[in-house]
Length: 361
Image 1 (cartoon, one colour):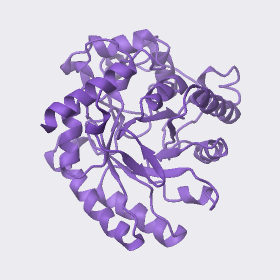
Image 2: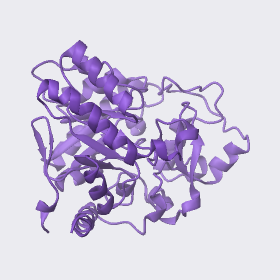
Image 3: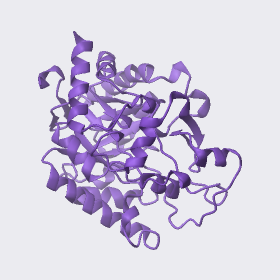
Image 4: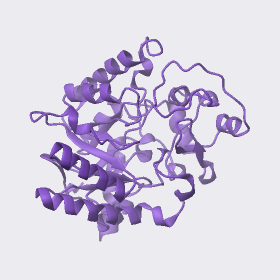
């Protein structure tokens, strides 16, 4: 396999052999097993921190400590399995955001990816000796500019890279429902805009800020297309769900393989953002106004209207991860229905490189 087809991705002083980042997927979909397998292929493997303590015995009684403990375990486990580059995904809206950031830094994680809100104060956790790279996830050039300006003025630093997540992504989306299918907000439009904004900040510091395209990227041909638009790397999540190493249950993965294009739907999430998921009986019930009674033991997301919500998003996603799709559902990207079967991560990466090579000739 000729690995020189794709350029390296440089994030600060880190050199990533292949410019592919496996997107962080909570709850429990991308943990140490998937992240380490991806890192071993020369890409960036990412552990999702949302609900990471789900398998700790005291998760519902001691939410904060259970999550901290689980995050340490997963990072250490991944480190035992790979010498490659590892990241964590920490959503700004998590009620335990600061704890997750501090824990990841203490464990020496290579990169923190942070979105679902603007991570305006993320650099406050980093002092001069810490090597952890900070990479915000944004949905617009405006958001990228706001973060770069704030970090520059307050912390005298810039993001080490920026992930731009378009409206075809899975899970919670940073777009209003009416703009999700509007071509004006497509990733193809967003990438050049963000590249332009960050170029100005980068020139001031004599430091280029790589832009990483995310949301709906499924093939090597897609990777090539976004590189032509100015991206330096891509983040892919949905494509990694249907791998043997993905940390989700076999039933969760099979949901992707069995899905059809019309099954991929936009839902209203209790956390106040639209989300993309695979339609099933659970979501049909919710749409028909049926409540799924629950007590909220976590209050895991700051914006969650748990008192008025028909179901608990954390419980639904935990159930799905474990294969109980009767009491939960699977988040998925726009292209999830294209999955044909479950394959090893190594085979997926080789396929992507081959597709990229064919597109670039």
